[in-house]
Length: 77
Image 1 (tube, rainbow, N blue to C red):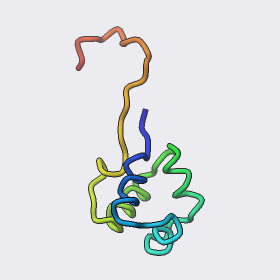
Image 2 (spheres, helix red, strand yellow):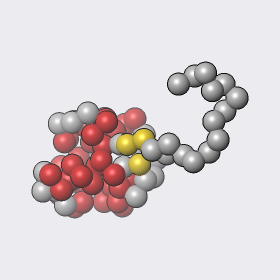
Image 3 (cartoon, helix red, strand yellow):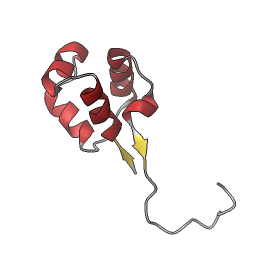
Image 4 (cartoon, rainbow, N blue to C red):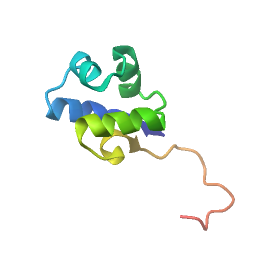
C-alpha cells in the first residue's frame, strides 16, 4: 500500500502547517489532508510537492506491503 506518511513527517521537520504548505504550493488544504491520510497522489501533485519542499518522491510517499498472498509468479522479487 502507498501512503503519504512521509509528507506529514516532512511537514513536521520543516515546521509547515497544512495551510502554509497550501499557500506556497498552490495545492488545496483539503487535498493535502487527503494525501496525508493516504489518498492517491497524481504525478502533478508529487512534482509540485517535491519542487515546493525541495525533496524526492520517496520522501513524500512510502510503500508498505499488503498482507495478501504472493502471486503465482513468486520468482519475481
